[in-house]
Length: 365
Picture 1 (cartoon, one colour):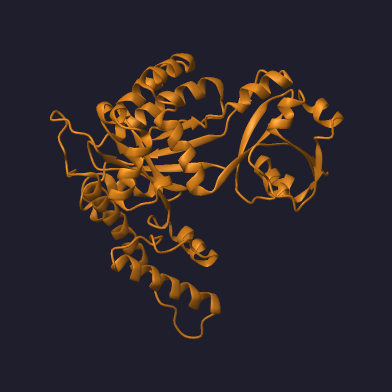
Picture 2 (cartoon, helix red, strand yellow):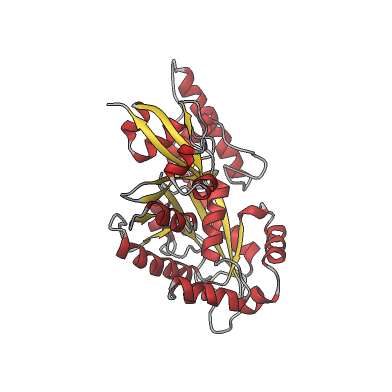
């Protein structure tokens, strides 16, 4: 499963600094994993996963492949972008296939960096959301009411289009705070039309180093969650300047630097974890002599669906799955140990995958 995050923000909010930090991580990834495709406005970065190091040691392979996240950069949006102002509208198409949107919001003061349309995080978010809502409204207004004798599906589609337009006319996102989730029919239409405000949102608050180190991450997250009136689990507070510095360091040096700053995890790591949580994703693992690898699936995915992430044919030809937990795999010293000590299970088509499952799929011909 490809996890793609579209990054949006007003000019001079720190979006480029964040994206450049991602690109530095991408360069390190590309050096070791030739499957990473690099485009000028795309950053592909690994999902931090400590479990792969231990698995690599246990099975004796030199190849480890983490799950990856693709970040798509959108040129700084300005008021009027939906009608062609600035460069933002030119790049809106790049975000339509994204799994979620990250709003980068400026929460730092710097007299040397001009605020171009940026006043404070709340007003910044309002401007960006308004432009995305207007872009969606333009898309929906191009839809035409079916005429004559119409199928039930066509009638339902038109009904949903009208519902979406009503929400946008009220200044709400299609997936607004009052909607727990979209129905399957609504979700299908948002995907067909590439609607932007139906996507789940994350909010990166770019603060100064003094602010980040002067309060706990939890306190800052709660503060900005309340200010923006958004779910706390979707808020990530970071200093993009620090992230840029971290991205230029090796793993050990980065860990030491974080320790010196009194931080447990980098902002990018927290961003990726939040993306997983907001999108309802989890990882399962494969571990063999050829490679150890993390794979991304939706929470609630069945074993055949998980097998299909490796290769589409595997879902159809699925027979059984040999499954153990990461904890048991490590405690028993690998595949031989879990098998000998009764920690290896044989699961069928109805098995629901769990976070950290280590799996070997049995596939028919």
